[in-house]
Amino acid sequence: MNKPFQPQRRTVLKRIVQYSALGLVALLSPFAGSLMQSTQAQTNAKVINLAYQSSGDIVKARKAVEPRLKALGVTVNWVGPFAAGPQLIEALNAGKVDIGSVGETPPIFSQATIPGAPQFVYIAGRTPTNGTNQGIVVKANSPIKKVADLKGKKIAFQVGSNAQYLLAKALQEIGLKISDIQIVALTPPQARDAFLQGKADAWVGGDPFLAVVQSTNTTPIRILRNAAGINTLGGFYLGRRSFVTQNPGLVRVFLEEAETAGEFAEKNPTIIANQLAPDLKLDVSIVEKVVRRSAYKLRRLTPAIIAQQQSVADFYFAQKVISRKIDIKQAVLPTLQYQAITPANIK
Image: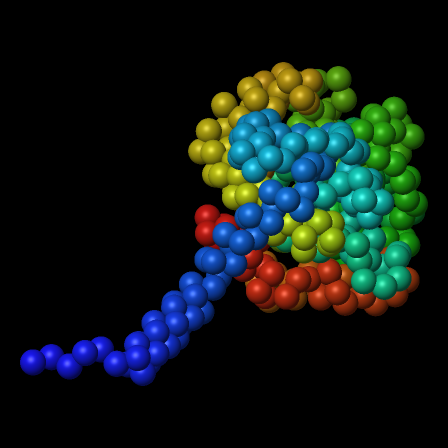
């Protein structure tokens, strides 16, 4: 005959179940944390301000992030177009932008200029291109035949952008520095125009502006040096620190859609060109050229990528381009926070 179930046995069994549940929660904590953060994302922010540059934005063009966030009760507000990365980060630091994409140089210049911990944090990396979408350009009939001939010449580019990194590294390759040339500091479209109008001897520019000039016969050009082997980082997505820490679920959804858009763009350049062309106000054939030599997929932030970015910052400091040495890790989140914001489709 079975003995009745004793109260103390019930207590023991209850504790076993409780401990097992705690163990399951511990095992699933990253997933559970993600779910909690998604719930928080519905209440911590009702609007997300996404930045885009004048060079175009495939996430904006795809229009896929809006319905995802609308389902969470969040409205997408696109802010821009910004002339380049430095202007975008300025808006981010001012609290007008929550997430935006820039090259490797703008966050370094911003961090070097403003003391203390940056207002922004790195949230994802961008896949590098092969370098053909950017170059140091002269007119076809220019007496400047090689990078060394740039010494003492007027060169137009956006200061604090990846154009400056390309120029500085190309000059270093032949033993020169930025201080050996005359800087004509302008936004990307202004720099292109100054070059075409003969107000600068050379221009450091990238797509879509470079593709436009290459596609017209008005001013034939030569590229002294493209970015192959120089701009190896590909750039980053940045987020406003307080927004990212308070809305990890929102950031995760955005990055997931950004990666999905990037995968689509690399597989369907013609479709993406047609979607980007209206915003860029360019012929689809030119935009498709831009798309085909761009890279859109994202990368998880690893210690190796952060170390590479630190080496870029150290290069600028050694070249006396920035006035103080900076620590990139001041703009890096703790590992657990990256687990919360980085979706599984980013490798």
